[in-house]
Length: 286
Image (tube, rainbow, N blue to C red; front, side, top):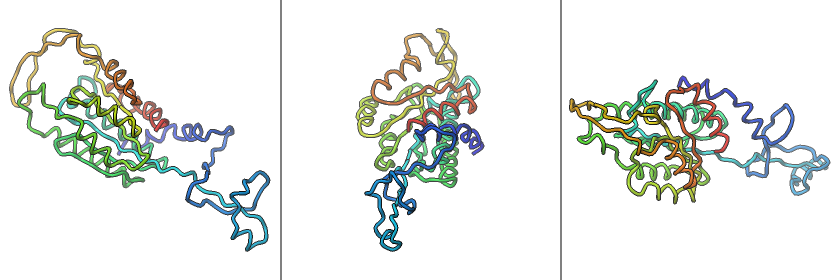
């Protein structure tokens, strides 16, 4: 909730850029949508197809009817809180960075009059249909917080290296929340998305607008190869070998971009101040 002030920064510049018109004053775009905007006197250059017959007949003077730009902006945010996301070596866990970025994006969309929904991959799944305004964002933030708390409190898996359930079913639940013409934004490190996930994403990207926020930690971007000791929450200890054969975040992002996703990389150490410009850029293409 405290990130709302960051989402407001640069909103005027974004709106101005979207208007597509020169000048220092930004006005609401109008188009041939279904919602009436107003009725006014006809002026030179108005399309005769927009003449309002009732007002013209009643007053004896030509009047035209204008309409709102037909645009129902609905976005579903998908947060990955599976066990592999509960990891971090700088500032915050990857799951926390994902939640911060999605909250910033949600506040921007809600502030622009859009509707925002939420789906979370966690031990206690969350699915919220798109809603607008501050109440919708309050419910979304509460859903993120409760899902993350449940993820942290979940008992450890017997095999930490294979603890993540497949991400595909959560992706389908998120898609089911989307109305026609909606957008889906996934925030994840995609360490272990599950078998067939890439094929599912490729097929889904052909039907809906799908974007990826790839969360990365400094350790995975530049980990010195060698043996690393680890301890699990249940008291077990062991040693893991880290090599250079594992795909880097840049490689993973490039692979999914080739499948048709719009994507960007989110470095956890940047923090919300650094995330805000990235979410502004992503918001502009949704």
